Length: 313
Length: 293
Image (cartoon, rainbow over all chains, first blue to last red; front, side, top):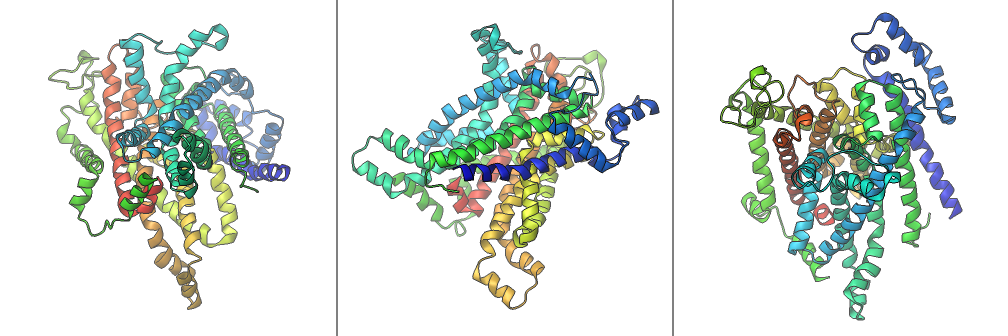
């Protein structure tokens, strides 16, 4: 297990290196002078020179890269061009709403989508199966911001059950917090649920055709026990894999959803940073998001051996 | 158990011999998706004739009007006709969707073929692809666009880049399973060149799943373009696209929900239609994959 752990950790290193090089290169890949673009149309030559010096763009490329890496290793993501605050501080301030939103979404999605997929596979071809598959196509197709506005329109404006927008920290009370986070989480969950329900159904169909499932039925086990204990357990690896890969989808959705619901999280920070062309902030957020993705998928890989003891690395 | 056998039985029934009409009857959703898609494409092509007013003409005396006989979807904050803007907006979505699907598939195919066939290249390429896939697609596109002047071309490039690794992985996995087949060995033995093996033997095998993948990429590209425009990092504001029409209507959502919801419905229906056609192609071209999904 320890050997596996270390090997898996080492395998994540090249991914992180590629991400870092890529994020660094982004600034230089873009056509034209990045300093001039960041400065905007109204900037004077002096402003441009100032930004160039601030970002170290006047240095040779390799020196720029290693200075940047050196700072990263010290946890220094640079300073915002717009507010001069350290990027790491800006990100830390916005972390809570985003983490709340993603965890809540993950919770809702897994709790609803896995049972839906199991039932669809169990009753394959039935109206339940067809509705679940229909829902899956729907969930993939309707963009998060459209769903978000429909939900706001129905539940916040017409019915007036939930607040339209905003975010309240958990520290200010459970209900105010929950009522604000329900609609955005459901919005974000739909696409993710579609993904999980679909793979659960597919994986369950595969396992349900195995001989040991017939044996389990034959020896008189209750259907529920066969489905949950035997079939789902064996179908779990692809499902967990997709849950991990889907985190990328979730992160992309966070940016849009937070914008629709005016949640002051990392997504909002991203949008503000784009509008201000605050490049160090954008780079910092990409690094944090990608890091989160790599860590989640590392955890998923570790889960394989727990879920399926036959898997040995 | 019986149920699972039933699906297996369905997927082995010969599809090639049954006609196109029979296929559509068996998959009514594909027929609906296809019909919708044709309608959307035709409407976008015919936009200059379908639109009632020039989509960018400003009319300050007619601002924020509700839907009426003159302005079917109402007007926006500059008095521009929303119906005409929505009809024109379809053009951006379709151009971006098709260009990204084509570009990402071609680039991914080239990299995937080489990477799957040449071991030395493979190690490096796959690490780069893993890294690219760790960056969420929208974030990657945002970063690229934030550094360039907004234009549809930049949007296409920025949306294509994150889609490429998905195609590379698909092509590579197909190449890896096929390259060990005896007929490839035979081709190598009689001295067929590597590029020729790729074009004559590997490409035809990769094509059916690739076409299906391209359809899904098209749907995803339409979604990402709309999301980028909605966030203000996509299609420039002077070109109407469904995303930026929605973005401009946002401040008035509580007063006039239709301003936001109508372009949203068009967007959702388009993506749904593309996905349904994709599912149909998948069932038609790759029954094995159909069963797995």
